[in-house]
Image (tube, rainbow, N blue to C red; front, side):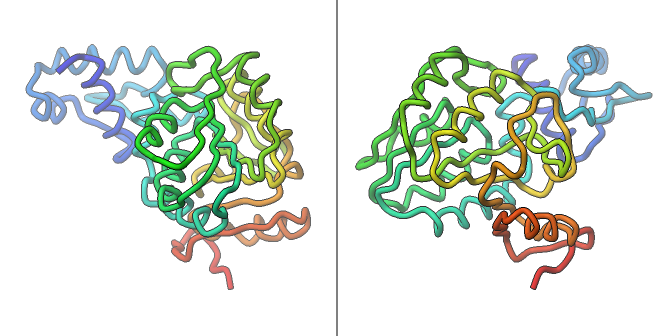
Length: 264
C-alpha cells in the first residue's frame, strides 16, 4: 500500500471516529509505529489532523480541503436521502447544473433512473459517474483542475457556465450561516458556484445537517440568493423559522435525532 493511500484511510477513520491511536493503526496496516507517526506528522502539518499523545484527532477547521475520496464517504446515508428527494423534484428532460461536491455525486446516482436529462458540471467525479448513462446530454465546463476537489475551475469554467440557462442549479457548500450565508474553503471553487447561481432558474442548496451553523473561508452568496434548501434531517426550529421569514422552501428527510427539532 502506498503511503498516500494509507493516509487517506487514516483520514477516513478519523472522519468516522474523530480520533486514532498509533498502536491500533500499526496493527491495522501492518506497519511500524514509527511509520504511523510519520503519517500523522504529515497529516498534522497539512492541517488535516491534530497530533495528540499516542495518536491524533480530526481537525475541526472546515476551511481545509480534505481529499475528495475521503469527503465522499462522510454521511453517505444523508447524501442519499438528499439525492432521493431531488430525484422526485427534477423532471424528465430538464437542464440542470451541478457543482463539484460529494453531494452532487450522490444526487446523480439517484437521478440515473431518469431517461433524459442535460447535466452541466465542473465535477470530474460527476462526469465519471455519468459516463455509462445513455440518452443524457453531459456537458463539461473545462477549466483548470483543482486536485482535492476533483473540480474544474477558473475563467474557462465560469465562461462556459455563463453561456447556459438551466432549469435548476444544485450546489452544496462547506458552511451555511444566517449572517455569513453560504461559504466554501476555496475562492476559485466559490467563484464557479457564483456563476452557477446566475445561470439557474431555480437555485437549490443541497447540504446535509453537518453544514448548518458553519463558516468557511470564501463566501459563495447570501442565503437570500437561494430558492430552496434540501437536507437530510429536519433543521432546528430557529433555521425553519429563518427559512420561512426569507421565503426559502426547505425539504428534508424524515429521520431526526435528539439534536434536531421534529418537523410537522
